[in-house]
Image (cartoon, rainbow, N blue to C red):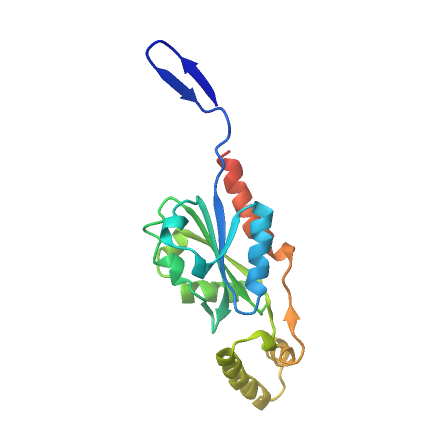
Length: 198
């Protein structure tokens, strides 16, 4: 920053780069979403906070906002925290990432989008999917009960294959597919945004 002085006025000229402020907000039950949130926040040097610990006043301070949560019956946990605030967050760069146990197949991702976002919301939100994992022991009592019902249904089926067989095996053998590689698309997206605004 330089100062130009005259007898009547002072002009302040900013010569440095204005730092873009970013934040990663997460909601995690089993820990997989939190792992990705940490990877993203550390890679981008963004603030990291649980969803329950932030309010609208603080959220307004940030230029880049990332929200991540797990998938439950194809719904993104707590997504309304972002979608209900889109009008108030106009002009911000917003992304949402969902964390699930299944592979990142195009048809499944499109199904997640259509099931969670209303018309026009994806014009304001960039969506990313990352494969997380499944650990039955880390679930809450309510979630364990619901997943036990699914386990009974899976066991009742004959000739289980693919995802269904893998899901049944995961009850006794936890799965963890989290990796920095899976988070690269969202990291690269925000790095490109920052480079464009540098």
